[in-house]
Length: 526
Image (cartoon, rainbow, N blue to C red):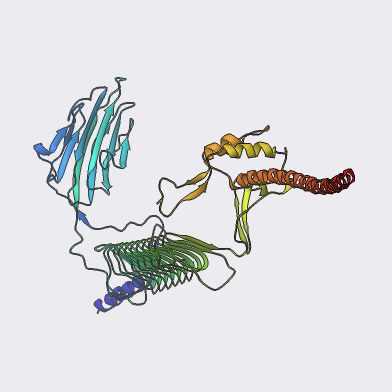
């Protein structure tokens, strides 16, 4: 009869324990499991229980370095003084315990006593991360686990003669024993787990899709089916190796691809799609913004409704199309029209698409005109402009922007022009059958007009079109003055001609009268 109450008590105790919360680091847990402090979850590991052999036991030697065998599962290292006795001053020695397939190394400090200024540095490799640094006054023994398949030991003692008893270190390779573990399973609804065997992390409403090794999926129906992929959000899928999908209904299906935002897709290897309804299907392509598509190799589409379908093309702005290889479309409603190497820029003045007409060309549309400034001050005097509706460049010539004005000697300009070599020519790089030109040489132009009383005008390799026009106008003005003189001389000459005609007529009249007089006198003499 006494067994029945005992059984009832045991059942009651088990029931109460099952209903209680469990606390680690706290005596008043408010949840089923509550941890105050760090929490570490790792794979189960094992190491050899066999002590190091004589061949696996080494004493550091000053000025030398030695390596354990790669096959060594364990090893012991002594300071240069050996198992007994202090080490000497002014020593340097190192040793390397190489890894193989082991994920970590266990270090047991069996003894430790260093003198002032002496040190023992433990690193993952000769040039790797420092895992542990020991100096004088450190005598703690114990075990440390390093997340490194190998360790490199570097010991130094200084020259002050203050040495210590040294150290004894036991090294063991840690082997991964997770292969026999069962993968996390049996979950329903909102779930949180880390699968030590596969390195998989999941949180939220977990999808039943395949889980890639060392992948991460968080949110609602997030799928990370490829190795080392990451999926965070709702309805997101990372199915490419090393891919990332984040946000809402994003898909990163290619290796190394990234899809972030809403309804984005990265199907090209190393491609990136970000924003809303963007597609990066070309290898190494980038699509950002809203409803953009980058389908060419290394293509970039940014903004809204832009398309970069040419290889190495770029489309930016709104409703721009870069469908030629190496082409660029920027602004609004412009297209490279399948021409390679083209660049086109458009303003926001129309919804009619402007197309490029030839390959490797530049075309731009700016309804308000163009202005280029040639100084940081961006003042009108240092700029040129193509006004709205214009078809030629204009330069600033407002008298209010000018100073030190001098009047040119037009006759002198005409004399200088008369001595210049003028004719036709072509540039060295041009086809003389199709690309001939008329005009002066810059050296002659600069020699004739490159200086005035205030300073320098231009240079000896180029001719400024505004200066060229100015020289022409000065010469034309001088010719006009000559023309006025010629006209005056012509008037005077015409007046002289008229006077000469009158004089000639008077002479003729006198001649006629004299002839008549001679006839009368001749008759009278008879």
